[in-house]
Image 1 (spheres, rainbow, N blue to C red):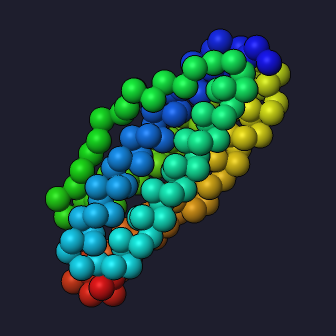
Image 2: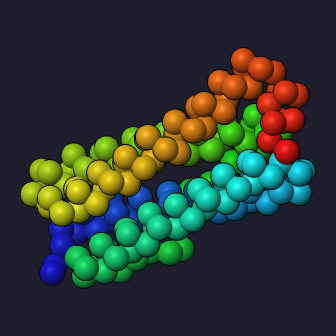
Length: 155
């Protein structure tokens, strides 16, 4: 099915964001593992898998719309040097994805591509209700219990 060229272009932009998130989370997960923070490693490693499934959904949709997925484009990575920096940088990524998803969902409605909209709404739900919420929670815990107590709980 020939899709709207702007929808395909916007899906490729979303794909670049997901691929960048995969890369950033992968690096952060390995840093957590190296530092002995097994709980953070497990959670962020799980996020790598979630972002990979999001990228896969975008690729499938781009192909269905007879577009070509652009696997070469990436957003800049923001690798943290400390746990709070890493969590904050990951939250910035997620909030950027939320804004981008909302913009593309709105565009899909204007061109009456309701199936793409529904796929993106599911990605938005995962991003807002799971990824971003969890990151906000962790940063809030650091504020409430202190960094050392938080880090001890992540071992």
